[in-house]
Image (cartoon, rainbow, N blue to C red; front, side, top):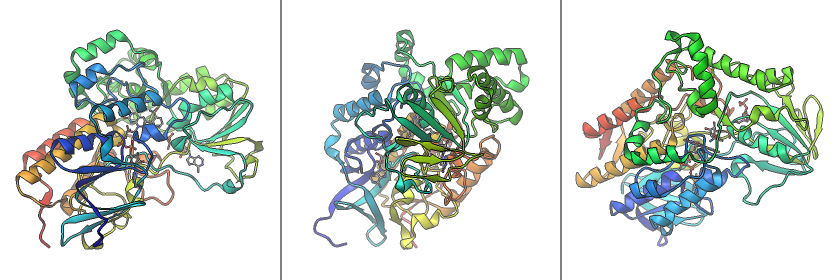
Length: 533
Ligand code: FAD
Ligand code: NAP
């Protein structure tokens, strides 16, 4: 690798989403030279790639946003309670301009390889265009950034248009007069189906597993709420770290098991109207206790029955697993859409797709279509990392080390991979939290750690194998106390056939936050500095 053209930086950041952008700013403020390598032609990550109709956040924008700069959070005004993808993309672009970050991003450079050379304590990173050497490698590659494209029999023969929600074209799509099929009924489908149904001549929804969804009751930003939040923004943000899922607007300590059933029902009615994702946090035992969970699940099933006029369709749309076991969805008119004459639900559990031909999907019937939309999700949490050929000490490949399931200490560091950090990596609250405060928490932690290393003249940091092992035991012990582990979901890798089945998110933001602080206060307990072999 003794190449003249190798570019040298103190740190390389992979990914220009919310995480990468903030990481660049923090490292620059520390006085380090850093560059972001991004495979897309622009910034935004999730909010660049997922441009499907209806794409928006489902955590209120007042808290699904950066908190690191008081002027930024005071001056930026969101137009809706839950902002749509174009506005979120505008926001991240504003942040990049406001903090003059664009010149630190190399676009259309997909990282294919990263190798740690022990004798130099350096990483060598390769992209499609360039080679780099660096001391620190920070993967801000996203938890939901690698699309899952199932290998449907005959997909390659389809002659109509194929779209995927997670790589949606930048040009506006018009479905008027078209017969459209959508495969998948997760959050992306649930957001897009109502809007596609308004245009398409016929819409065929191919469902394998139904999902619970709560109405967003989205609307223009309530100026009074905005004023109140902005009057105490720093305190409001602190509440993110006190709630189990990192959502300030979702805090209730009451238990269904100790409440009067009529009162529970009345609260559910209220939460159905106003809470969105917060419905799940409406009672503290919904995530923990199967009986309490069943009460909440029944309430939603009854709502579906009340909304969807055809009883057979209503039954097919009603999930039979724990509410929250798969990521809860938030919608605008999803269940109502199935009352439209041009919308048809096909149950793949009973009639799997046998073949896709040049102009049809064949299941219980032959459905002739013009457009096929894949809303089939992601190789979540680990896909973006295992896609890259990452080699650590002794030429150990990350892919191999994670064959039986990903392991990481705190979701930040991986044993045998020195000076490599992951933002919202496996073993951290990440996807089971409001990701904006979780991203900022990780970027702040990584930056402080690098600063500490410089001040304390430490060259190399890595997780000890024991700390990592113990941490993943804790992640699983906590998960086993909840309803999350006995449902097939992308939280545990069940959506990708070839993937190891392991539950990866740490449940409980406040406990996690305490652990992070404890580790730092004990001089990065569990990490090894300047390991000697
Ligand atoms: P990303 O935004 O995923 O960015 C990662 C970047 O890394 C991408 O730009 C990608 O191109 C780049 N990259 C990956 N691999 C490579 C490589 N090898 N080389 C170069 N570049 C690479 N979370 C919430 O908390 N609330 C929400 O309401 C919410 N809504 C969501 C809606 C959708 C449709 C999706 C898909 C996710 C949503 N999420 C939500 C999760 C969302 O991913 C995070 O909130 C957040 O945007 C992640 O930011 P990030 O920077 O960590 O990762
Ligand atoms: P997803 O939740 O994983 O949903 C994928 C869907 O495709 C599921 O219904 C799945 O069925 C189906 N599917 C996958 N492979 C299939 C196959 N071979 N045959 C038939 N069906 C198949 O993916 P997503 O909807 O893109 O959402 C992923 C995550 O992104 C969400 O959970 C959320 O965290 C985030 N997100 C958030 C929002 C928001 O509201 N802000 C919007 C979109 C996404 P099975 O369930 O049977 O596997």
